[in-house]
Figure 1 (cartoon, one colour):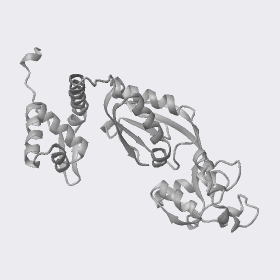
Figure 2 (spheres, one colour):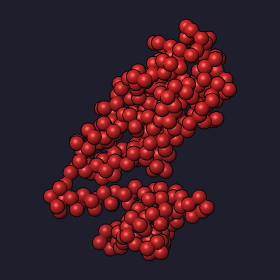
Figure 3 (cartoon, one colour):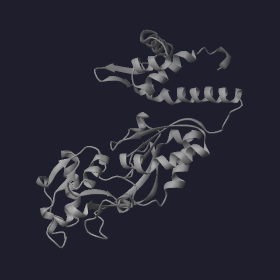
Figure 4 (cartoon, helix red, strand yellow):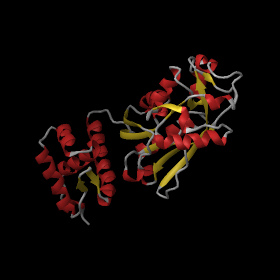
Length: 307
C-alpha cells in the first residue's frame, strides 16, 4: 500500500482520543473548545471512514467497543508523535515524553508515589502523569491505565507483571484507646475491641484475614466503616478504634502504636503490571522500568485490604 494515497483527518482522530480520555462528548468538547454537535460529527466521521463502531452509547455513558479499544493506542501514539514533532520544532524535544496513566491504591498514591513522581519528572520532564488513586482494580485491557501497582499477581495472559517486594500490614490504635482495653493487650483481649472497618463487602475479607491470625473478630465489632483507606486511617488516629496499615507507614505515625508489638496481621506481595502491547511503547517502558528501580524491595507500601 502506498501511504501517499491514504486520506486521514487528524482532527477526527483527535476528537476520538479526547473523548476517550475525558470520558464524555461534553467534557471532550469543552477540552477542545468546540461544540458538542461538532465533536460528535467528527467522531461519527471517523467511524464511517473506518467502517467500525468505536463507542457503545447506552444509559451508562459511552463505552469503547473492542474495535475502539484496539484503535485508541494507535491514535494516542499519533498524538504523542504530533507532540514530539511540536517539541522538535521548538527545540524542546525529549526522547521520553507524553501522557502516562498510573493506577495505585489510595495509600500508595497518597503516601509513596508523590515523591517518586517528582523524581520521575526530573528524569523525564516531558512526561505528563495522570494518577488514579483507587482501591478498585483498573482494567488494563480496556486501557483504563497504562501501569498499575497491585497487591496481587495478575493472571491474564495479556498482562505482564514484575514482583516488586513482599508487603506486610499490622493493627494500630492510639495509646489512649489501647489503655481502655483489658490489660495486658493480647489476642484474647481484642475480642472486646472496636475496629475501624471498610464497607460491608470488604469487612468480610478483613475479618477472615484477622481470624486466620488467631483473632476472634465479628461484624458487630465494626462500629465505624469507611470506603476510603485514608479516611479509615484518620479515624484510627482519632482514637475511634483499631485500624490497619502497612507497617512502614503505621510504624512511622507518631499518633498510633502497634496493637501487638512485632506482630503483622497481613503479608502479601506487590506487583507492577502493564499491558503486554504497551511495553512496546518507549514512554511506558521507561516509566515501568523507573518504578521497578524505585519500588523493588520497598517493604510495606501497598494498602490492605485489596479490592
